[in-house]
Each structure stands twice: as structure tokens, then as C-alpha cells.
Image 1 (cartoon, rainbow, N blue to C red):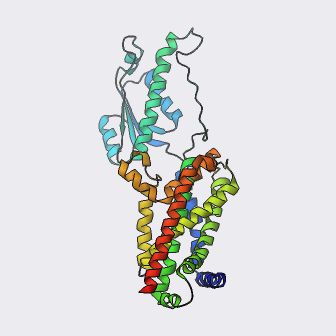
Image 2 (cartoon, one colour):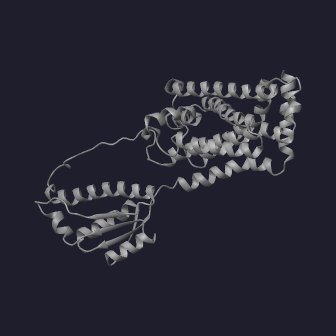
Image 3 (cartoon, one colour):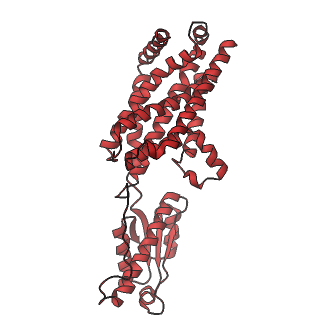
Length: 374
């Protein structure tokens, strides 16, 4: 068994490195992809072009504008009328706009009012920027209103009326990159593993050599193992290179056990490769295999929690999401990196990945045996 599997593995590596275009693309492509995606998404959403229509021209309105600049989410510039606000947002020159009405300062300082209306207009076609603008604006107006209203009243007080102590665990600087970049690594690793493995058996079928392999003493399980070794070796090396990039280039903390992560990542790569091998087992051509793998990867993004939180999905969709190993892996991966978690903290996710791997490889071997009988 070992001799037959080893010979098949050598054949796979030989065929791969004979292709002078495919081999460098497989090795360097995912690294370049992670670098570009992580670099572009790790900067956060800030300096949104923001139109400001200040109809009050008071110290209070100018103070609010200064607070906007200090928040760094908004990049304010002044406009003269509401028509210009409408035009700038419609043409994309502004993603947000503040309208400060006349009498803003008077109402803000009035003892019987305690507040003053101010309008924020956002471009809802850019949902992420709009949500960031609304969230930041809510905190900005609340803090600024308290500062202006309570400062004269509390001038002689020893402390503010409300003292909140805030502690942030596992991501002290609240960096979005610490959440997004590990997710991007997990997604890219899963996509590369699935697409790479999806071609290996379909290629043999397309070239007409699968029938020759089927009549050899190779068992279906040996064929799966031999085809897997090349793909899992490349996928694992790429994962380690991308992990090094995440930690040393993008400064994502590595608080957990590196040895534990390396062992579990190997298990995860095996399971994701199983998806590709299962696709390859029934696809007739490499093009079919790639298209099916691409479709699976797109669905995987949605149900993994990478694009949308799984908790916000309908209950039935939450159940469906459990068939994708990436969903469980992201919980494990971020737990080890950011929280220093151990197996006792994520054993349900680890068990789910293990069970999914058994099911996927069982189906793959069944499909190959059926092809052999046909």
C-alpha cells in the first residue's frame, strides 16, 4: 500500500512542477492575494468625505465641527446650501453630510431644552461606510452635548455625573484588522485547498488516464490518499507562509500555542481538501470541477460568518452553516490567535470538523468505487 501510494504521490508532484506557469502561481498567488486583501481591509473606515452646512456659525457649531475632525471618521468640508449637499451626495463627492440649523447654540445651552437638533445625512448605497458614520456620529453628538451642557453646571464639581470604566479584552486597540485578517487567511486557505484538490481526479478523467489508474492494483482509498498528499502539502506550506505574514507583517497577535495551531491547521487543510476531492470525483472535466469548487467557495463565504454574522441568519440557515468546516475553523483560529484558547475552549468546533472530514472522505471514496465499477 505504501509503495503504491508513494509512487502516485511522486507522479503528482512531477506533473505539477513540469508546469512552469501553474507551480509559481499556486505558490505565490495566495500570498499576493492575502497581502493585497489584508492591506486594503486593515486600514478601517475613516476620513469619509463629509459635507458640512453650518447655518448657525456659532462657537458651539464650530466646536462640533472640530469634534468631527478629531474623530477622524469624518473629513469635513463646508458647503453653502442644502442643494449642494444633495448634489455632492448624489454624485459621490460626499459619503455623509451634517446640517447644523440656525439657533443650534441657543437651544443647546437652554436650560429647558438640554439638546439641539442636528441632522446627519449618509449615503446608504455604501452600507459599511454609512453604518460607521452613524455609529461614530451617535457617540460624537452624545459626548459633545454632555461636554457643552454639563461643563458650566459641573464647573465646581469634583467629578463628572457618570464615570464609566471600560476594559476591552483580546483586542485592546479595537483593531478591525485583528478580526478581519485571520478570517481572510482562513477563507483563502480553504478556497485554494478546495480548488487545487478539485482538479486532481477530474484532470485524470479528462486526459483519459483515470481508467488506467482504476485497473491498477490501487484501491480507491489509496487513490484518494495519493492525490491528497500533494495538495495538502502545498496547502499546508501556503498556510504557514500566510500565517507568518499575518503575524509579522500585519501585527496580529499570536497569544495561543503555535504547535497546537499547526496540528489543527493540518487537520483543517485535510478536511477542506476533501471538499475538492469530492467535487473532483464526480466532475467530468477540470473546468466543471473549478466552476463547482468556485460555487461552493462562494456559498462557504456566506455561511462561514466571514461576510455576515451567522447569529443574524434565520434558524434553518444557521443549521445549514454547520456543514461548512470554515465556519468552525474561524472560531478555532481566532480563538488561538487572539484569546490564547486551548482545546477545552473549542472542542465542539474541533469535533464538528473531524466529523465533517469523515463524512466528506467517505462520500469521495464511495464515488470513486462507483466509477471503478462502471
